[in-house]
Image (tube, rainbow, N blue to C red):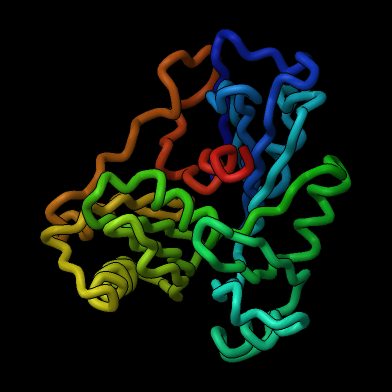
Length: 266
C-alpha cells in the first residue's frame, strides 16, 4: 500500500485541544485524520502500510478527543429488548456461525433502538490505546448505519464499504434503516452479487436506489461493474478537501470509515 499525507494551510499539529483525531487501523494499514473539534471539518490526514501513519510528524500532539475503527470486525445489531445481560457472545455466534476471537464490545444505538455487538483484533487495539488511552472504539456496523442515515435524501440508499475480503452494507429508505450486514467478498463479482442481494432482501431495485460505494479496498473495476447495474452511482470525490498544503490527493470514498467517525462521536 502507498503512503501519503495532506494538510490544509490552517492545520497546526501543536494547537492543544483543537482537534478530534480519528484513526482507522487493521488489514495491514493505518490512517488518521484530524478534524476541527468544533465543526468537524477535516484539516489533516495521513495513511500508509502497517503503523507508519501513526508515527507521522503531523499527528496532532494533544487531541481533545480520539476515536478509532479496527478492521476487520465481527458484529451484529440486536434490538434493545432482545439483548439479555451476558448474551452478546451468543448473538455473535448465531450471526457468524462461531465465536470470533478478540475483545467483545457493545455500542448502544438509541436512534435505531438497537445495540451493536462487535469484536476486533486485540493487538491493533493495544497499539492505539498505548498512544491514546482516551481513544473511543467505534463499531463499523454502527458507523455504516449512521452514515447511511446522514446521506439519505428521502429515497432508497445503499451504502457499501469494501474492505479486505469483507463488504459492509447498509440500506436506508423512508427514514428507516432496512438492512445492516457484512458479507465475505474476494472478487468484483462478489461485490456486485452481495450489493444486489442486499437490495433484493429489502424489496428494492438497483434502478431506483442510489448507491454510495467506498472503502479501503474498492477497486476501479468494481466501481465500473457496479455502475453497469445501478442507475445512480454517487461519484467518488477526488479529494477530501480543496485546500491542500502538503502531499497527495486522498480519495474521500476510500477513507469513508475514517472520515465519518467524527459524525458518530459528536
